[in-house]
Length: 115
Length: 113
Image (cartoon, rainbow over all chains, first blue to last red; front, side):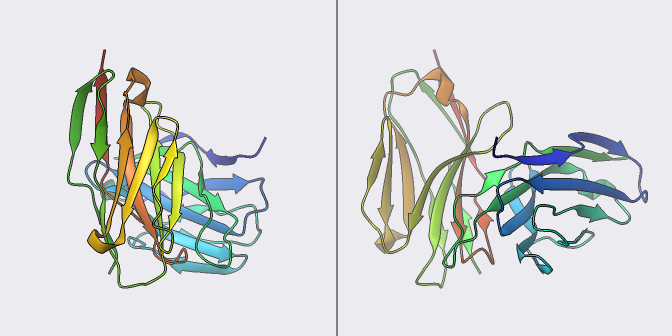
C-alpha cells in the first residue's frame, strides 16, 4: 500500500531534549516536505526536499533540521525543543514533477508536546 | 510573497444545503498551482483537487465543484447538497514549483443533520 509513515504519532518531551520525528514513503517520490499545523494558522512549511541531498527552508525553519540521505526518508530533527514547537506535524511526499508539485500525500501526523 | 486567505473561519449549514468556501490567493508568479485539501475530524489530510494557473475551466466532481477566477485571484469550492460527512476543515493551498507551498488558515465546515 502506497503510504507516508511518521513515527512517533504522539510525543511528549521536555525543553532541550533532542528528538527526531521520522518520515518514510514507499512511492519513490522525489519531493518531500515537513509542515506544522497550528490553530488559526493552517499548515506552514518547515523544510522541503526536491531530491536526495537537496533540502531547503520553508516559511518556518527556525529550530528545525532535516536531512535527505535516502530518497524514502526525510527525518525532522529538533536539536533543542522549546514549548513554542508544540504542534501537529505532517510529513508529505509527491512525485515532484518538473513543473509544480504533483499531489502531495500526507502522513498521519505527529502530535508533539514540549513541556 | 505568496499568501492564501480563507476569510471564513467557520461555517455551519444544515444538511442538504449548498455551501461555498472562499479562497483568495496572492502571488507574483504567472505559473502556479492551486489545491484544496480536506481534514476530517480524524486528522488526516485528503487531497481534493489540483489546478494549474493556465486552466481556468471550472471543475465538477460529484457534489463538489470549483470555480477558478484568475481575474479576482480566487479559487472557490462549492459543496452541493451537503452531508454530515462533509464536516471537516478545508484548506486551500498555493504552490510555486514546490519552493513555497503555502496553505490558507482553513475553514471549518459543520454540517448539521
